[in-house]
Length: 488
Image (cartoon, rainbow, N blue to C red; front, side):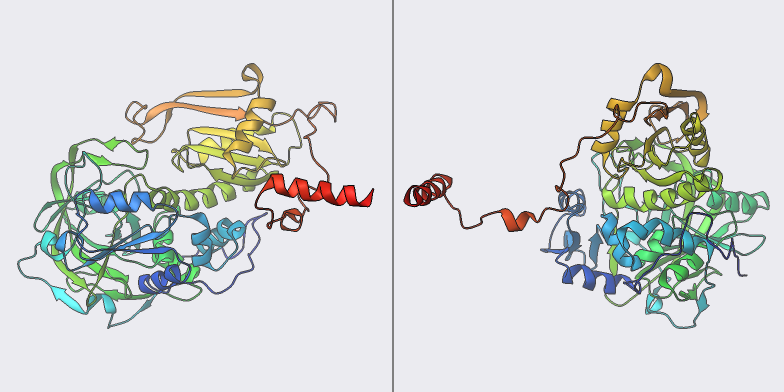
């Protein structure tokens, strides 16, 4: 069933100019990263317990990691595939400034997938005596994680009523040879499960590991229920995504994926899961969670296993970019003065939102703050700045806050509101929100908030004025003085 949100871009969101996207599958993306000197191949033997995460964290944001035979396991592990915003732009085939508009365009104009009967992800099939630990090199990342976790698996399920699929990423703890503990937060996946559970049924599920970068990004789209994120992946690819039906159930999965785990979310079964190092860089608590029983594992010959280290840049940016695109569109619908938004890394790409506006009236910034807080419950602190402040530079935003904000006039406080359950400072997700109006008052004299500027600084050809041959400054000064003496 094809689902279309809209066939036009909302006001202020232009269709971006773009090249053809990169990375039809994970392997092509690794080829690209290696050509760009952004792939580090790690020698065999790095420990799956903490070792993989330690190396990946040291390289975070500078290079992806490819681990050969980690912990002696024959399957290689990759990490850090999308740990820089510019890399995401390359994957989409657009300039970094066009990432949000391109993502929004794909979300609004999904492409129905193309079903095939043969797929690389089913070259090898395991259905008997399944042992996830033996089949897959599943790392343990952080010091107090309760065991090995699948962290980059796309969970694909079907609405038990409509059959429409949902794609999302959940932390999955290996709790037995063919058993996974799953944290399902109150989103679409949990809604589908609750419908099945109400009828006394298990819910069929597939866990896709080793998807291409654009399908990873699509999995995080914030769209209404019953919108298949694999169709958004197709739009990001500019062509329908090839999918194949699972061996043991009705779920369709990306045909070019590396590994697929097929199973069922068990009806009315809960087991202990956690703790686990989450994106706020604290541990998610141990509690009774949902359970997946595994029925089959399929994969490519010589597969690659993708892992995302909890709290690392890949983890933060994968969730941050889709939220930015959604919040930008949400705000522009009501506030045409909004120009750009950014979820900062310091705010774990979830909690701190910076909004750039072309201010037109007093009080507008506070309305925008309220709109932003209503846009997603994760948003905790909103800072609104003028067009001369770069929202992608935290130092610029902090400067605006330091020089244009007065707490008794510009602070907005909302108590007892819904926030993130993974924010340890909340009371089971209930907490306070803050808004900071760091814009210049429209009534201010023109010179009062005029930013200092050195004429010609930005246009200066720095390489043209630096003398790279001057190895010793004292000798260089002496040579110039000698020239002046000869001319006297």
